[in-house]
Image 1 (cartoon, rainbow, N blue to C red):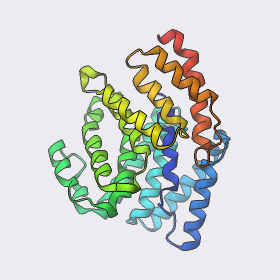
Image 2: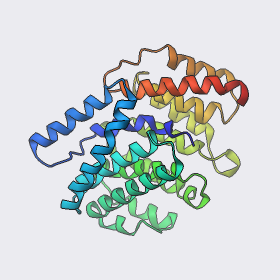
Image 3: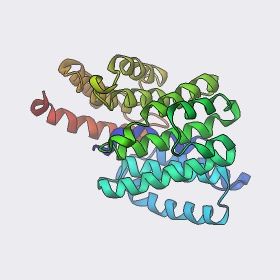
Length: 282
């Protein structure tokens, strides 16, 4: 599995999940997030994040039922496991912890979510209507952590059977988030709809609409949306011309866009790799 599939996810680090609930620490968290997102050296971030993971674990040990801390921990673990870890076993372990943290955060925030593990699709969807605008960010974090988890376990068909639930979750998130929507959700929806081929429930044409929406919402600044569009849709349907056009646009773009520098640098690295492999694939 190519772990770069969720490079857009780092935008979650500035979503308002403060590491410690105090003005000074919240400010530090926000500034740290911005510094990470505007860093042009992915290796530096990769080497530094484990320290933050251990710090987060210690904070959660001290306040194990804090939704804010749990959500922040879920975001960090899902991001690191999905983006920077190449070993599948380790990636599975990290995203499993992310999923546990996110589940606990939702359970503390919205009691019916405590029954989500093991719930059928109908049982899961029936609980979504009770989630309102105030819980939108927490719901988004759970969806992101779940997608990272499912992607890391993509060889397990039992795990992929949960994809319709997460799609329903993001649909509900879009319904309740209004103008505060995190535009990364459109990339995630596109990814989910292309994780399976059409014969097994994938919907590539709907995915295409979401990928194009993700590009439009960032005014083309988020280059990772184009990489995922090429990887998830163009490769799946063997559209070589679209595949190469999108990736060449990524390589020709200026990655230095505020809030997207790190993800754009990583997107360009992924684009170069995909283009180099294109002749063998197509």
